[in-house]
Length: 124
Image (cartoon, rainbow, N blue to C red):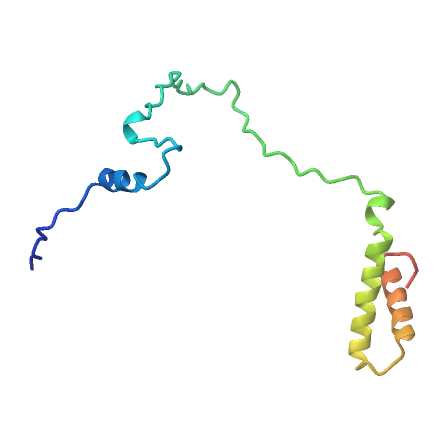
C-alpha cells in the first residue's frame, strides 16, 4: 500500500557539477549558473482584437472559380519523352497480352499506332 521512503539524501546537481569541473584544465573558464545573466524583458505590443464589422451588402461571397489553363495544341500534346514512355508501356502491355511470344518490333509498332490514335494524331 505505502512504499517505504529512502533515508539516503541525493546530492544536488550543482555539487556534482562542481566535482566534475575540478577535473578540467585550469585554462578553460567554467561558467556556473550564478554567473549567467537573465534575459532582458522584451516589450510586448498590446494585442489588438479584431472588431466585427457588419457586411455592407447582403450578397453572399462566391468561392473563387478554379483557373483552367487555356487549351492549346502545345498544352495538349505530350513531349517527346512523355510520348516515348507512353509507347514503351503500351508495347509492354501488348506483349504481355501476347505472352511475350512475338517480335519486339511488332509490339512497338502496334503500340505506336495505339498511342497515336489515343492522342488524335491518326484517324481510327
